Length: 150
Image (tube, helix red, strand yellow):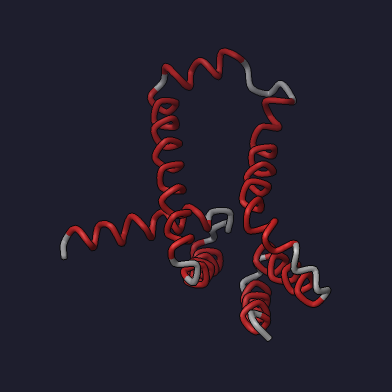
């Protein structure tokens, strides 16, 4: 069965690493595959990232919606060193995310290495697996750096 064994392996890795996100994603994809709902795959491939980012942004912006962020605090973002560094960090992160997306489009099999790296980060470094795209961006940066020295 095409892809099933890899999804089962990811499910097991997610369970062993106690990563509910990886395990749930593998389960959902297995259910879609076994239910023969293959028309969903192109939709997920095309819009899944946008949908995930939408929910991530919604979660991050809840304090704004609840009124926990004031205009004064927002102004500090543009006038304080931590705020300016946050702006620079956001710009660099989005650039790296774009590079990561391009890398994954060229080499989609890299996702397994990124997931294994995420599991290592979860288990040994106490990380949170919300950044496969950022991990791909860092990988792209590493590859570009190595290519500079060839």
